[in-house]
View 1 (cartoon, one colour):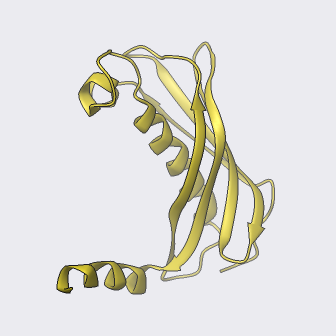
View 2 (cartoon, helix red, strand yellow; view 1 turned 180 degrees about the vertical axis):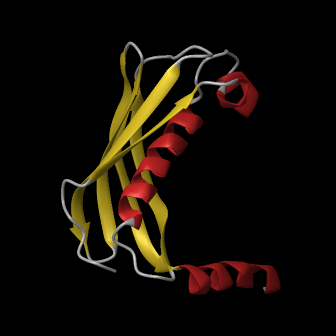
Length: 131
């Protein structure tokens, strides 16, 4: 793993489609951007941001998400997530994450990722099937 730069950030965007609605993913009954989808977009931005500091064979896994979803977004609107590195402690990296739609901020909080060796991590996880 290379030295992680505090302040590095990445942004990801998407259009709110039927597949992203609370009603579709099972997190509610309404046709609004689902909280789990907002979190996934935030995690995606964080994972991409951290990837520039990884060596071959490394990846990162999410270990913590603490966010507020403060405003609903309708079907068809564009949403954006930003993840900025706020701290790094060895292989643990903490991000400030925020999400916006075309009208303003819709959520924010913190997210942590941990750098692992991809193959070793996958093998350890798959070993649960043998137990």
